[in-house]
Structures are given as structure tokens and as C-alpha cells.
Length: 304
Image (cartoon, helix red, strand yellow):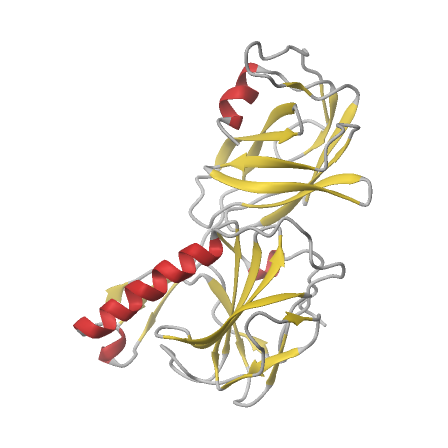
């Protein structure tokens, strides 16, 4: 899709209902055709809803449209990222994420469903991330040449994986906490390893004894089951629509790469492989390449 935001800026969206942070529940706008674009505003009346209504950097949120657009798919563009829209049980749906480094304040969300386009502002509420200092083996901060080459190859592989979007929603139930145990380091922490600033913590740590079973958070396909330098024994599950969950530092991998896994299937055991200070599960989520907080996964209840 080329230039959704530019097209949407030229075409005001039809009268509708929008439940979103910083936007009144009912917004009227003139319907105008974006001449020469081949696109036009959604037919009126229609509803577009966002849940939850308050959005922070690192959050996952869901958009739904109730409209007859005569198409099966579409696309959302937000902060330079693109997220698919599908028709799910008669309603157009998109699962969208704001990266942890998104700037607080309003940002334009543009969308296309078939030949129709529109836009709205999403207001990101500021979120404070803490910091922590950790001490690890020097070999995990001062990388040897051959190790650096390995890390670069793994980085290319992961970027390609995160950029792959399955245009199908593979899950139906709420996401679940993948293992028992208390929560450890939260998402977004600014981290200092051996006195040097490093990338922020892009997941959630769960403290569990070695050998504790780790379950798939939801149905999907295991697209990676192997060893990576920083995350050790790692499993990645593609849930569709650009949504991936990652399970790292495993002592044992039980998932088979390429195979479907069901919600609650054991994919491995808690361990201490890779760059760690002790046994735990690092649970990460990527959504169309954005770094998002696992605690905002659809339907998740950490109390269970």
C-alpha cells in the first residue's frame, strides 16, 4: 500500500463514532473524495472503535470498524508501521502497537479498507520506564569478532522474521501467562550491563525455577526453535497479523520449528541460557516489528 497517510490526509473520514484517547466519542467530518487517488472516504454512517481507550508507548490496542466496505482486507499505518486489517466474524479488525519509543502526544493513524481510506489522531499518554544495572560475563558485552559476526547474522534473521506478516488470525482465545512464578524485570527498562548502557528491555521476565514448563501463550506456528547468542535457547510463535511471542533462555526446547502449537502446549522449560544473571523466562512480543509490552496482549490476565 503506497502513501496511506498522504491519501487519508486529503480525504476526511465520514461521520462516525470513535472511542479513542484524547478524541471525543462522536466526531463529525466532511466527506470528500481524494481526487486522483482512486480512493474515497468510508461510506457513512460507520463506527470505528479503539480498545483500550488510553494508549501508552509499548501498548497493543485493537481497532474495529462496523461498515460495509466490500473487501476482505485492509491496512493501518501508524508511526511508520503497517498493520493488517481483516474481516473477522463480520467486523473489520486490526491489532495495532505503539513502539516503546513512540513520542507521547497525538499521532495520525491512517487506514485503508478496500477502496476506502480514512484517518484519526491517536493520543499516546506518556509512560515512565525505569532502569536497572546488571552484571554479566564480559563475553556478553565485549564481543569477540566471530561472536559479533554471529550476532549480526542473527539480527538479520530476526528482522526478516518480524517483518513477515501472516494475513490470518491464528488465535481465538485470550492470551495466557506462559509459566508460573513472580514477575521480574518489566518491559521497557533502560538497561546497563557491566556499566555500559544497552538496548531497553523488550520483554517481561518471569521468575521460575529451572525446569518449570513454559506454555504457548496462544495458538500459532513455531517459526523459530533454536539457540541465539543473547537469548539462548529460544522459541518464537507467529500468531498471525504480525503478532509474535518469544520465549527465551530455555533449558530445553520442546517446540518443533514449522509446527502448529495450541494455546497451553509446552514449548520448553525454564533455564538460564544466553545472557542472563539467573534462571527465568524472558517473554517478549513483537507486532509488525514494534516492541510492545506482553502485559497488553489481548485478553491477558496475569493473575491466572
